[in-house]
Image 1 (cartoon, one colour):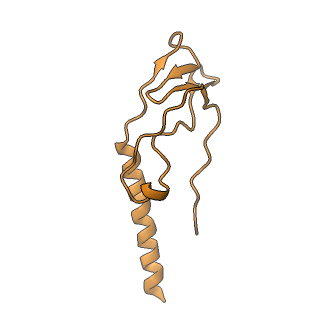
Image 2: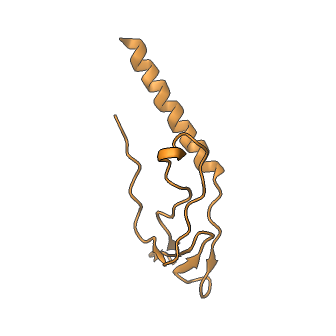
Image 3: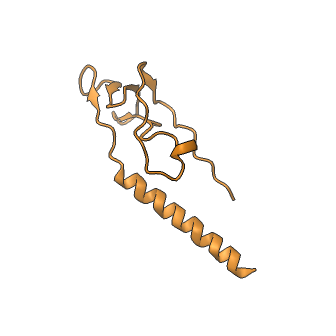
Length: 102
């Protein structure tokens, strides 16, 4: 019974390492301010996003998709670019987290 649990732990560690490596290799979306360096609305290569100001004078943009969801034909394939959007996307809140199975 020990071998399956060790195999399971190794598979989880390998999946976590692969996810970390993938996140380091995907370049962030390029951004350009809409109306100056302090604007909360900026344009990425996929569309416009609205962020939030933080107490120290910085800006935060959360949940910007960097790739298409890995479902259907995209499952177990290299990531594809996220779809473009036309309206200003609200990025003031975190996106839904990925499911975690125990």
